Image (cartoon, rainbow, N blue to C red):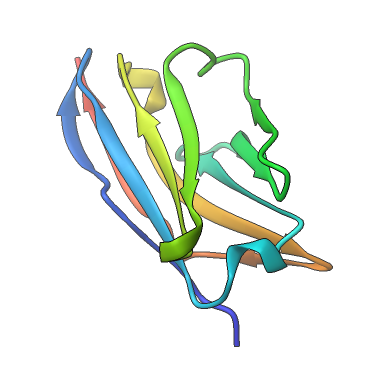
Length: 114
């Protein structure tokens, strides 16, 4: 059974930084891609950033230049470094792994105060 476990969320002031971690229960190269999505109250779940097996990255326009997705293959972990946080970044952040099926973590809350 594949598990993705997020950590690192919390409360931060606008302009601050947080780093989210997603630990996978198996080798992350077995996923075609991994990424981060977020869902604010009353809104749909939206893509934030993805990283492919080859290392290519993709970002939502709203986070380009502020967020960085990276990985540590030895630790089977994907990270999301979030800088210059804004109140509109407030959401539950979910880790995603694509391997035929979509695998999701339980989510971690990020709250940015103004």
